[in-house]
Image (tube, rainbow, N blue to C red; front, side, top):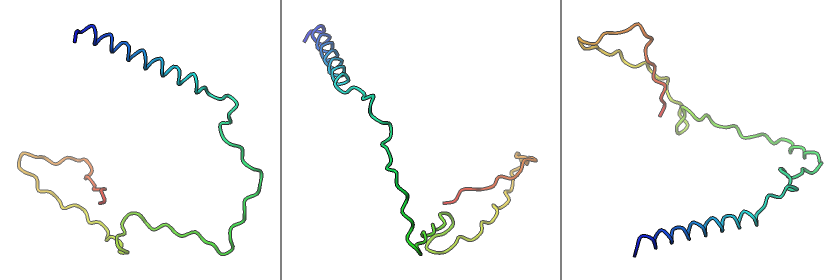
Length: 98
């Protein structure tokens, strides 16, 4: 197949896609009269049933199988090699919980 046929075919497909997109957009115009939010009926909220209490949300961190996690212990002090020097910066704390 010659190269010009491929170029012509791709041009035809592109023009068909553009024409189809234009036609779709023309047929699906925005309705300016459509409300952004539907109106809400004017009525008072129904009172809650007497004695109904919401269920408490269980804690999401630190509880597995009904058992609470013991408090974390600090990381052990590292022994530095001869070429490594300690700095006066605060110690790094571990905050990851898995």
